[in-house]
Image 1 (cartoon, helix red, strand yellow):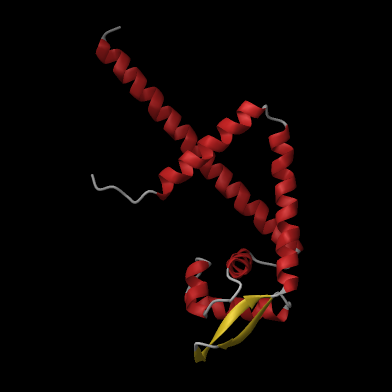
Image 2: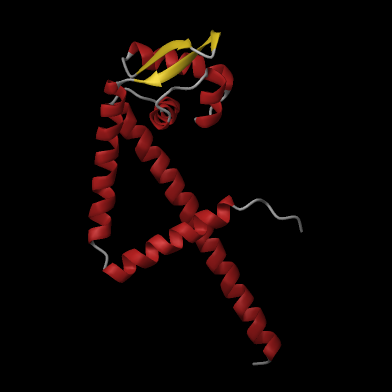
Length: 160
């Protein structure tokens, strides 16, 4: 086998590996999204409502609707309706913005925090069950690989 053949074989193997990683990450993302949506229905929440509630959890002082839309990765026009529904469920509330009386700030309630804690606990229990089936070195490699992959995905797009 020539050096050229070895190089071509290596490139093919790398392409196949990349294709398999791509397939598995897409499958995992789709599966996790579906599972999360199913679980959230048990709590009478949609994925967008969950995303808004999660964003509100991160900011004790609350967000304006435009800030919340950006933080929750939602379309600004839909955030008001989402907050309306969360408010009806007692999971969020709105207060006047002390900096600008023309706007309001949405905040999470204690009930909303408790609900997120419950949802997180269930999800973490499933992850801990999986991690418990791995050897320590496998857990460390998994964590390292996931961090590296996420960091790579977060890097700004490079021009060719």
